[in-house]
Amino acid sequence: MPARYAMVIDTRTCIGCGDCVVACKTENNVPAGLNRDWIVEATRGRYPNLTTEFRSERCNHCSHATCVYACPTGASHYWQNTNIVLVEPGKCTGCKACIAACPYDARLIMHPQGYVDKCTFCHHRVARGQDPACVSSCPTHCMHFGDLNDANSIVSQLLDRRKSRALKPETGNQPNVFYLS
Ligand code: SF4
Ligand code: SF4
Ligand code: SF4
Image 1 (tube, helix red, strand yellow):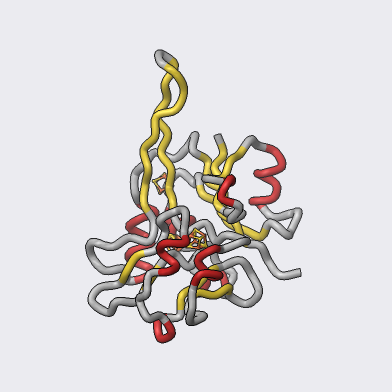
Image 2 (cartoon, protein in one colour):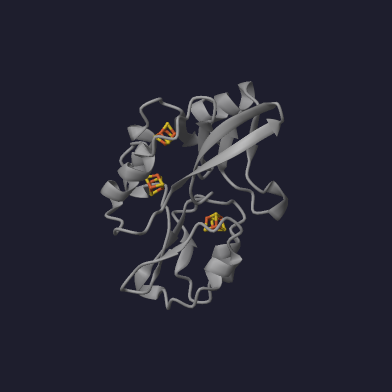
């Protein structure tokens, strides 16, 4: 069975330090002013019982990726039969159909080249058996990565044991980044 790669992030131990964002830029040579991942600071609960939650967000590598289906040239595609979504720069015309089709605002336009870029789940590292750079760099170890089709993987076990949620599940995109709360 092909892998279904997922990221599971514990919002209780994310401190919003941004090391994951820096690691991504360094690993993937993301130019200044552009980001493949970002931190959202959200207030949860009801006054006076409010808590601040930090969320490290990126492409959700959706199992039903509307960006892939919207791409007219095949530049946006699934990697090796998995759910990892990549963009082939040479095939990308910069038409922005994928940007309009993504409910997570996860795509960016590379300047000055003009092709669309995004998080790759660091597939080059995954191919070597390593975790994505952001996961490896997190100082609180709140980020986890693995294959949801493997019942013994850390991500399967965490989702079995803990309450979790994905962002905008109502879109039907079947996102594969989960937040433990
Ligand atoms: Fe949160 Fe870890 Fe990213 Fe820091 S590196 S913002 S603790 S996910
Ligand atoms: Fe595509 Fe957006 Fe889903 Fe990423 S989050 S796979 S860019 S639809
Ligand atoms: Fe960046 Fe890799 Fe993390 Fe995606 S998985 S946000 S490309 S470091």
